[in-house]
Image (tube, helix red, strand yellow):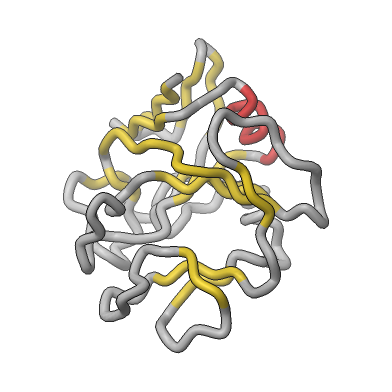
Length: 162
């Protein structure tokens, strides 16, 4: 099943419309690491990561795995681990997946720049929990937790940003 993300910050799945936060610099057809934009394209939902200490495993149609305190995601284009999940500590620049703020309590890993990985074309493009005020992301797509859980439970396997 496909979810469609519109440039106006709405995600649509099975006729239901959800408010979404997108990149602070909008949507782009030419994604570059660190540009703060959400990439345009059809991205497979590769897997879902979640904080098992905060919520039970969400229903979804893709592989599911709990994250641990030492999980991260490499966003350093100079690293061999660029755009891959890594174990911390890590010398290369990375994001910590175990966050105090709850934004990564549920993380849908989207298939952006991963088959193959191209250095500098963008990393860590996720479907994750939005801030309460729907502040822009660094390039991800973020939904309120109840909405994210509902979208995943609907069986979404692809996200189209158009």
